[in-house]
Image (tube, rainbow, N blue to C red):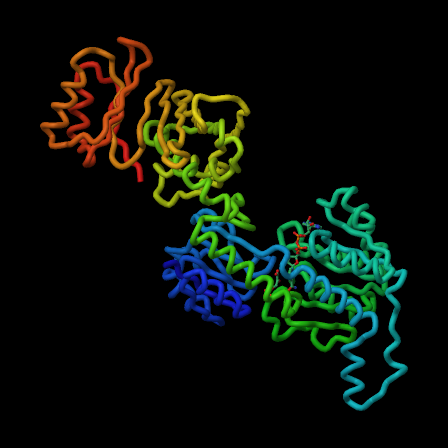
Length: 526
Ligand SMILES: NC(=O)C1=CN([C@@H]2O[C@H](COP(=O)(O)OP(=O)(O)OC[C@H]3O[C@@H](n4cnc5c(N)ncnc54)[C@H](O)[C@@H]3O)[C@@H](O)[C@H]2O)C=CC1
Ligand SMILES: O=C(O)C(=O)COP(=O)(O)O
């Protein structure tokens, strides 16, 4: 039974779902890094929010971990490259808390416009300072969105409802989408010069870190009000403090900080500064949404291999997964067959699908071919990290769907270009479920690829099979199945034998010395 650790505060719905689906679950929150490292090795899955830092060290200790699920959107607390290279899938729940976070941004915008927290504190202190708290209207003001993805577009919708003008800086926003959203796409400099309010809605990446730098803050209109419900690190907090003090910035509201938890900050106590403790996603509705989604996604992955919302692997629905499973087994075996026979300088891999296979999601098939192909280099290669390794090694990948009739109901062909030239193998599924080789390096041969096998290329001459049988027999190796193919009579023949035990090196040397043998290799399939 798979085991999952929930290491951040999460709606009880998550644990309920894991248990209902037969997954053992522990909920242990507030772990230090060392405490997490000590126990993470016991778990197949890890469900987190933003507090748990899934670092390289944590992943190195996570020897059984297959999947990390983020109940929320931002995954800057997960070292995704390290997870990918360790073959760990990372998923998030990209929509479950977007409305809630957008609403928080709007709430903070109003808090700034009408100085609500300070007015509240003053009133409750019995001061009744009616003349101190003069606000501004948002109607007809310009809201500048930095980042106009899911949350940014909901904020835009709400702001348009409030009769604001909305401009957006987002290099990936198309003019059509901007028009559809009712916003004006602008450059960052235009946004800084025009906005009365700025709200940030980008992930924290190298391109967005410090996007509101001191220099950019100075480019803003005097009297600007800034809301950050995205990530600390997008704003230079020291410059923000200085410019709030100088009055250049009229107000700032931060839900997120460069260092969290932010238990102290030079900003605390600054007039017109409002803060909340990373509450953007904290509503009953959003937390139930993300808890249910993350638990379902992790359960699907651990129980069926279904992949949803993964950041480092192609998607594969829980319905698709069982249909694709035999194809992935076939793909992996075909990849492994080529990898075991020729792993010298792989330059490119071409994956072709025909018949029923042409109707399927090809990405997981490709990942499985690459995993099989490259596992010969390292046991730790799997479907998650294989495409990354291939990219690192600059292996070119081509995927081709053929809409044509074939001799088989379904066919998968893999051509690997190595330093020795192209190597093509093909296979089908018997009964749409059992992987079966149909072609190896241009020769038709039907065989199961399973367990220990012996691959031989020899001159097609009488007497060879007898000599081979004797060599195997006298070494005590029993033949399970025997498959034969040849290019043409008297030419080159291929033999694929399944054997009951692994072929010892000494026997392989003897077989290679038999007259007519060109190639003899021991193979193993899991
Ligand atoms: N405060 C909180 O509790 C929450 C914070 N968040 C944060 O909000 C962020 C945004 O979430 P979504 O809108 O769902 O993500 P999204 O991926 O839908 O949108 C992000 C947008 O940022 C844009 N972008 C990327 N690089 C950019 C750059 N250099 N300059 C300008 N725009 C850039 C992208 O093109 C995209 O449209 C998340 O990454 C997360 O960090 C999300 C949920 C809750
Ligand atoms: O979903 C996100 O990106 C968030 O920042 C929400 O964070 P949280 O789950 O509330 O710790």
